[in-house]
Image (cartoon, rainbow, N blue to C red; front, side):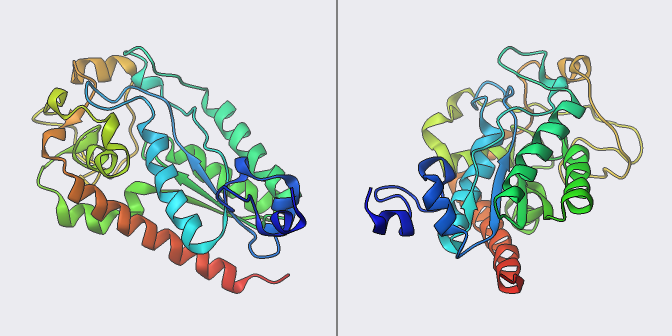
Length: 270
């Protein structure tokens, strides 16, 4: 490899993608950025119509676009998450909450050892593992002096979701996730097998089976709960998903994350 390649990044790759870089490429890249994006997801069932990798494909797609625009670094995704409620269908992997926290913390802390100052944990398995990532962020800030952020996709595309939605319930593998996958990996979406699954007509006060519903108290579902809720694996109506909705969600998520990255980079000191 030439000296120019070592200074500029992979000759025929993406200069932000860590897995395609050498250590010399990374060393050179740290001269232009100290920000690392870490896509965090899970490998779990997403109904009849979506693949197991949805919760990684979504944040990875957002992060790739953010890294292209801002020239920050992109880490390999975290493929395994806290998914015990989806183990009622085959193909789902789950790890213990404490194991997940320790693993993600160690990944980010090691990046801090070689010069990263800002870490964004871009979470595609939002709602379910938000508590774990909030703890990881707190520990990274207090124990490693890293500027760490938990970035749930459901938050950074919230305005677009409310603008484009045509269903009352989007809980799991429904309108939002299916639309995003149509925009990102349409070849993996089986719209002819998508099924509408309505949640129970009533739920406890302050809880709701919707990403933007009346979820005002902490609650969680077990695998037995999910099995009672849905035979297909999804909850909500994925048949209302469109590429156009997905592109709108994707655009807002990228814009919002770019804004944070650019602010962090503008404020850093070497």
